Image (cartoon, rainbow, N blue to C red; front, side):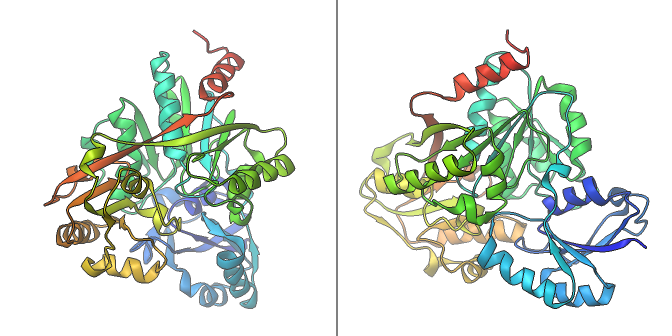
Length: 444
């Protein structure tokens, strides 16, 4: 008899766990997925075309709130927890209890079984929390390699919130591809910087198929990890970005601890904003749990085209959505820029919220005095535009990774904040990448 499995997810790692461990494996029957965190992704199916020969009708995705009911209905024996950026005690603990009280075993996936092997050298960049600085690290590595003459094919952690069959393998090489694939703001934030700097990035659902396509056009494959998740590809060089503004999270969040304990390089970012105590805590955890890792120290360098444009203004700060919602950061690059460049006041957006953005603040009541750039649907994008335009401010300070003004119409002056990895001393990215290239006989 096949063992009955239920996979708890959030439209990403859950599908990858299924594809790499359970698809076409007759020893198991995955009776259902559950979904959480992301709006409007439950009540659909993982399609038969992706699910394999054992699931001719696909696999239904249910709201996570139904997990206890589903365990009893389908006689589930084991529940696999397969999403990320969550605290072991406050988030996973209650869910584990619900599962066990319903009579099933609660388990985590074997991350190392989910690593797809590549025929090309792989660099993986992960993080200990959403908003640690993973994207700026990835951008720097990709730019450095391209300037050295290497072809880089990047692959991003999945965000398949639409038609899963259509999104199985996606390639983004032009800005028009963002429209073609009906990307959400969250997706655009991750893909656009690669495209704007002359690169190509893949994403989707089936990451073995994605990797095979990336291998065709890259000398090096770059895993651009998200949500503090583990890499989906077996990494020859594995980096993790640690956040001294949230010290300790590298050990208390899932699967931050897996990244932190196994990475070859630990980057302690945001040195210019952190306390000595926060930095020290990460250093001590690195020494204890990953003593062989190379440690890199870096600032998250914040710049704007005209700092004087912010000085003395009452501003609305718009930040990266996931960083400030389930990432639980009360500040971001926009907030840092507003404070550093002399804004008279950072205006709270709450009195001006429109539509579903009000729901976001109900679900995440501890969001700071900022506006998360939520855009998982056309309605959310419209609500974001309406909220910004209704705000009683002199200027909008945009701390998202993309040109938000290209997506929505803002009816007041705005300034875009840029942020980049700026290493302090040695070792730095240049020396680490040089050693990597030499080890793989890729030096030119």
